[in-house]
Length: 415
Image (cartoon, rainbow, N blue to C red; front, side, top):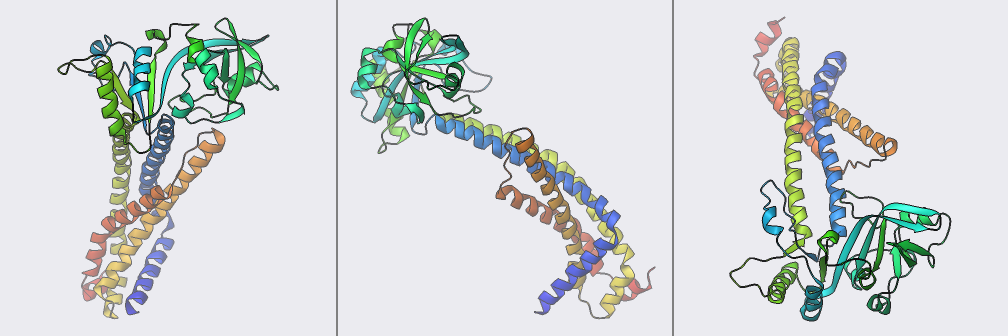
């Protein structure tokens, strides 16, 4: 109880000292405010960016492997000349995998034609992504329909002229109308709309169905060469729940080498891409950004910490005779130390809270003014408060320790 009473009195002394020197207090906490604002702003922006990217990556599937010509490799030493000679995934590869893959829950062959124009009577939509996919597309990707239905097995096998379209395409071709059942012109052919994808919105990887037209693969092969490099053919495999991603990758690598008759001493002539490759690269990138945030904000906090330490030494000098009186009346050394240490901590906390307040204000402006949602989560708030307390302890300890070691007689006699 005695300790708690001393703790409370120390806090009151510190708060009164800050209140009596408002201008000095304000100038002292500017450095801490700027530092906390900088660091937490960077971390909040990075966390928001990371979350948006991760949600985009999750759309690609956490248990999905993409068999492609080009690997998902990043960096300046990318050996493009080696991968350029590889063959594209073929229908033969696709059919063989469908027959032999035991870990796969769904296997889809897919091609894409970018920047196409779609027409319905006098309306047209430019820049659409036209995709052709086999029947298992709905097993590989998770999507919702705002109207209509998905392909039937018979429509996929026979190559029926049907399609599903994204919400933006539906709005552009059929304003205030029901798109299902209408015929649109795609690559010079009439295709019936049987379904409309629910609106998803744009994401950072461009993974969105809003401007996509999806048709059965067997219909697309009548319009274009679906094994051509121009259309980026790929085989997408989603694994069964009971198998791990490593089990899938091991089986698919063995099957593809067998299907393409690759000798044991030869390298793979295909790439097995997975979202973990993207996640690993994103983690590396965000670590660099985090370090940059610490460096930029750290300098501001360092300057603020030196400023607070300087102000605390001035405060000790001004109150030396009061310290002497307190000690002559029985105040212990730790009471004097806590008094000044709390003053430094409170000063840093005030600066930290003001900095967090500016960050929160910035998130509101970004969200409601520019439609850019930035999240200030509890972790960053706790981090800002913790940094403030640590800087307060570091900056205030030596002035507080010096004050606690003053001789009471000499302190009283000082002016």
